[in-house]
Amino acid sequence: MTRLQKHYLYLLWRNKGFSLLGIMMAVISTYAGIALVATAGWFISAAALAGLTAVTAMAFNYLTPGAIVRGFSMARTAGRYAERLTSHEATFRLISRLRSDIFRFLSSRFWVEQPFDRHQTGSRLLQDVQHVESIYLSAISPGVVVVSVSAGYLGVLGYFLPEALMIALPVVGSVVVIMPLLYSRLVIQPQDELHTLRSTQWQTASSLISNFRTLVLHDRMVKATDDLTTQASRADGLEVKAVNRQQWIAFLTEVQLVILIVAVFYLALNAASLQTLEPANAFMLLLLSLGSAEILVTACPVVASLQLGIRALNRLNHVAESEAEETSEPRELITSKATQSTLQLSDICYQYPEQPDPIFSHLNKQFKGPGWYWITGPSGSGKSTLMALLAGQLSAQVGHIQVVSADKQFPAVMPQSIGVLRAQLRDNLCLHDDYSDEQLWQALSIVELDQWARNLPQGLDTWLGDGEWQPSGGETKRLGLARILLQDRGIILLDEPSAGMDAALAQRLFARLAEHWQQKLVIVNTHQTFLMQSDQTEIPMSALITT
Image (tube, rainbow, N blue to C red):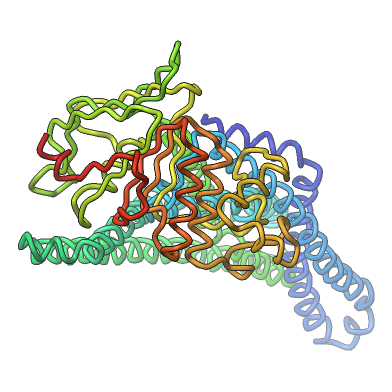
């Protein structure tokens, strides 16, 4: 059992009061609904039979059955209302804590923004959180209801019509156990493969669009589009296969339940003709079977929700652990007796998958601090790839990167795309660390955002992001720089930090940053060489690749 699975069970146990109450209310409301249908069927048929003669009509008690029907109706309504309140309260308590714990666990790792921008990671993360949230409402609670209804239905059949158990037991067992196992084996696995294939398809399409010029220049456009078409065809075929299997299993389940209903009603009518069962009870058993079948048919979705939730917890646990591994494995951090920060690339070779030529082949380079290094070159020359290798976001196929850090920390990384969280300005600056308001205002002042922040409706407490206060492109870049200032690492990596900024503003900022970071090792990937100071070093990518 993974760490997050254990944590989910722990949170479920912590909220056992509302969780158990919600399950109990779900069982009560379901029982009341089925009993209402069965009792109403008995009442109607008994009243009809009693009305055949004047004597039985006068002797028939209409009041007690009518009161029982009203009682079940009220119990069903009250139970459903109480079940909604308690189960949703239990779910909200559970997922609110689970969400915060999952993202706290992720954020406690070394902060790298870029991996979470990947479609495969981002979409899967969102879907997995939704699957985990539905475990209680869509699997645990309805699962208990299915088992309770199965037991109750078989118990009533055993009391009124014991001979029907020979048919009911295998059918109920098949519908509740065998068909869900078959569903999980034949349907869930293709659906999981389908999601992975759709993610790969999206990545291929995104890569095709973003690298259109490179693909055309290298005459690889036709192959790229053929690969995308092949992936789409495979995904469509897998989706059709999964839907067909799902429909067949649903059809087989419903056929078994129809056979059960017909068989029970036939045996009940036969027992009534032999006067071993009251005729009205035959109709009661028919409606009881119909009401129970409506619940039993949900067994397959219940098991599917449970399995999807468990797999989601496994994947979230894997993401949480692999992100840390992914960001730390490519580099070796040396902290003992380090007085100056250094980045040493030794024999680095890196080639993108399905690309004919490597980006770097046996690259050796040392960046020694304090000082600024500006990596320059045209688009597509490998600047961002080099930054991703230095940041640990990519792993070289050959060679290693040695990080000698005076402050015993990995480099602070500012990616090209700065994510604005839907949260307060202070949270967008602090991320998972804690800083004082004085530190926040100092960082904002350095990047000339202090006046902008003071003009916001609630200052540092103003919410940013989608649907809230949205900073411009240049303001977003400066927020990214403010984050790096707050982290105060000995080594700083900046990937196109001035893109979208006014030239005069960028010159002022980087002149100020050069003074503020004069004792640090700063490596900048840029097209804008006019921002360099006279004592800083320019390294063209062409010089790195040829050495």
